[in-house]
Amino acid sequence: MSPKKIFNERGISLIEVVASIVLLAIILVSVINLLPQMGKKNNQNEDKQIAVNLASKEIAYWQSALQSDFNTLLANPNGKFSFIKPDDKLTYDSDTITITTTTKSAPSKYKTVIKITRKPDLKTSPTKANQISIFIYKNSNILVTEIYGYVFY
Image: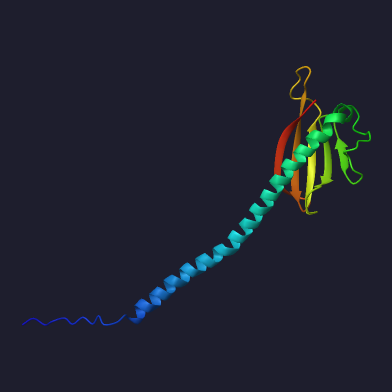
Protein backbone atom coordinates (compact mmCIF):
# COMPACT_ATOMS: atom_id res chain seq x y z
CA MET A 1 0.00 0.00 0.00
CA SER A 2 1.10 3.45 -0.77
CA PRO A 3 1.22 5.95 2.03
CA LYS A 4 -1.60 8.45 1.95
CA LYS A 5 -0.79 12.12 2.14
CA ILE A 6 -2.83 13.95 4.67
CA PHE A 7 -3.87 17.50 3.81
CA ASN A 8 -5.14 19.63 6.62
CA GLU A 9 -7.39 22.25 5.06
CA ARG A 10 -9.53 23.07 8.06
CA GLY A 11 -8.20 26.62 8.56
CA ILE A 12 -5.82 29.25 7.24
CA SER A 13 -2.21 29.46 8.14
CA LEU A 14 -0.44 32.32 9.87
CA ILE A 15 1.53 33.05 6.69
CA GLU A 16 -1.66 33.58 4.70
CA VAL A 17 -3.03 35.97 7.36
CA VAL A 18 0.18 38.03 7.45
CA ALA A 19 0.33 38.18 3.64
CA SER A 20 -3.25 39.44 3.39
CA ILE A 21 -2.62 42.10 6.07
CA VAL A 22 0.49 43.31 4.21
CA LEU A 23 -1.42 43.53 0.92
CA LEU A 24 -4.29 45.43 2.55
CA ALA A 25 -1.81 47.81 4.24
CA ILE A 26 -0.11 48.57 0.90
CA ILE A 27 -3.47 49.31 -0.74
CA LEU A 28 -4.61 51.46 2.20
CA VAL A 29 -1.39 53.53 2.24
CA SER A 30 -1.73 54.14 -1.51
CA VAL A 31 -5.29 55.36 -1.15
CA ILE A 32 -4.45 57.56 1.86
CA ASN A 33 -1.61 59.21 -0.10
CA LEU A 34 -4.05 60.18 -2.87
CA LEU A 35 -6.48 62.07 -0.60
CA PRO A 36 -4.35 65.20 0.02
CA GLN A 37 -3.48 65.38 -3.67
CA MET A 38 -7.15 65.22 -4.61
CA GLY A 39 -7.96 67.98 -2.12
CA LYS A 40 -5.21 70.20 -3.52
CA LYS A 41 -6.41 69.61 -7.07
CA ASN A 42 -9.99 70.43 -6.05
CA ASN A 43 -8.79 73.76 -4.59
CA GLN A 44 -6.85 74.53 -7.77
CA ASN A 45 -9.90 73.75 -9.89
CA GLU A 46 -12.08 75.95 -7.68
CA ASP A 47 -9.62 78.86 -8.04
CA LYS A 48 -9.47 78.31 -11.79
CA GLN A 49 -13.27 78.32 -12.13
CA ILE A 50 -13.62 81.49 -10.06
CA ALA A 51 -10.87 83.18 -12.08
CA VAL A 52 -12.41 82.19 -15.43
CA ASN A 53 -15.75 83.68 -14.36
CA LEU A 54 -14.01 86.83 -13.12
CA ALA A 55 -12.03 87.15 -16.35
CA SER A 56 -15.22 86.89 -18.41
CA LYS A 57 -16.85 89.64 -16.33
CA GLU A 58 -13.72 91.79 -16.49
CA ILE A 59 -13.37 91.56 -20.27
CA ALA A 60 -17.03 92.51 -20.72
CA TYR A 61 -16.57 95.45 -18.33
CA TRP A 62 -13.40 96.72 -20.03
CA GLN A 63 -14.76 96.28 -23.55
CA SER A 64 -17.77 98.44 -22.66
CA ALA A 65 -15.78 100.94 -20.54
CA LEU A 66 -13.20 101.51 -23.28
CA GLN A 67 -15.73 102.19 -26.06
CA SER A 68 -16.17 105.91 -25.40
CA ASP A 69 -12.59 107.01 -24.64
CA PHE A 70 -10.55 104.41 -26.50
CA ASN A 71 -9.12 106.74 -29.14
CA THR A 72 -8.12 109.21 -26.41
CA LEU A 73 -6.51 106.42 -24.36
CA LEU A 74 -4.46 105.25 -27.34
CA ALA A 75 -3.32 108.77 -28.19
CA ASN A 76 -2.68 110.01 -24.63
CA PRO A 77 -2.48 107.29 -21.93
CA ASN A 78 -1.48 109.94 -19.35
CA GLY A 79 -4.93 111.53 -19.47
CA LYS A 80 -7.71 111.23 -16.88
CA PHE A 81 -10.27 108.52 -17.61
CA SER A 82 -13.40 107.57 -15.72
CA PHE A 83 -12.61 103.85 -15.88
CA ILE A 84 -9.16 104.30 -14.26
CA LYS A 85 -9.61 104.34 -10.48
CA PRO A 86 -7.13 106.06 -8.13
CA ASP A 87 -5.68 102.74 -6.91
CA ASP A 88 -5.23 101.40 -10.47
CA LYS A 89 -1.77 101.46 -12.02
CA LEU A 90 -1.48 102.40 -15.70
CA THR A 91 1.79 101.84 -17.58
CA TYR A 92 2.44 101.95 -21.30
CA ASP A 93 5.05 101.62 -23.99
CA SER A 94 4.93 101.92 -27.77
CA ASP A 95 3.16 98.56 -28.18
CA THR A 96 0.90 98.06 -25.16
CA ILE A 97 -1.05 99.80 -22.42
CA THR A 98 -1.16 97.87 -19.15
CA ILE A 99 -3.66 98.51 -16.36
CA THR A 100 -3.15 96.73 -13.03
CA THR A 101 -6.15 96.73 -10.74
CA THR A 102 -7.87 94.69 -8.08
CA THR A 103 -10.78 92.68 -9.37
CA LYS A 104 -13.93 94.66 -8.68
CA SER A 105 -16.33 91.79 -8.03
CA ALA A 106 -14.05 89.32 -6.25
CA PRO A 107 -12.28 88.68 -3.01
CA SER A 108 -9.12 90.72 -2.53
CA LYS A 109 -6.86 87.76 -3.22
CA TYR A 110 -7.33 88.27 -6.97
CA LYS A 111 -5.50 90.89 -9.01
CA THR A 112 -6.33 91.78 -12.60
CA VAL A 113 -3.88 92.90 -15.26
CA ILE A 114 -5.33 94.30 -18.49
CA LYS A 115 -3.07 94.56 -21.54
CA ILE A 116 -4.26 96.47 -24.59
CA THR A 117 -2.34 96.51 -27.84
CA ARG A 118 -1.86 99.99 -29.23
CA LYS A 119 -1.76 98.85 -32.87
CA PRO A 120 -5.04 97.49 -34.23
CA ASP A 121 -5.23 93.95 -35.56
CA LEU A 122 -8.17 94.89 -37.77
CA LYS A 123 -7.61 98.09 -39.74
CA THR A 124 -10.66 98.13 -41.98
CA SER A 125 -12.66 101.28 -42.22
CA PRO A 126 -14.80 102.32 -40.35
CA THR A 127 -14.13 99.63 -37.69
CA LYS A 128 -10.80 98.92 -36.05
CA ALA A 129 -10.06 96.26 -33.43
CA ASN A 130 -7.36 96.18 -30.78
CA GLN A 131 -6.64 93.08 -28.76
CA ILE A 132 -7.34 93.20 -25.03
CA SER A 133 -5.93 90.54 -22.70
CA ILE A 134 -7.13 89.94 -19.15
CA PHE A 135 -4.84 88.13 -16.71
CA ILE A 136 -6.16 87.06 -13.29
CA TYR A 137 -3.54 86.51 -10.57
CA LYS A 138 -4.08 84.92 -7.17
CA ASN A 139 -2.19 86.44 -4.25
CA SER A 140 -0.60 88.95 -6.67
CA ASN A 141 1.83 86.54 -8.30
CA ILE A 142 0.23 83.23 -9.33
CA LEU A 143 -1.35 83.36 -12.79
CA VAL A 144 -4.65 81.51 -12.59
CA THR A 145 -6.22 82.29 -15.96
CA GLU A 146 -6.08 84.58 -18.96
CA ILE A 147 -8.61 85.54 -21.58
CA TYR A 148 -8.40 87.49 -24.81
CA GLY A 149 -10.84 89.64 -26.72
CA TYR A 150 -11.06 92.75 -28.88
CA VAL A 151 -12.12 96.33 -28.43
CA PHE A 152 -13.93 97.48 -31.55
CA TYR A 153 -14.04 101.20 -32.32
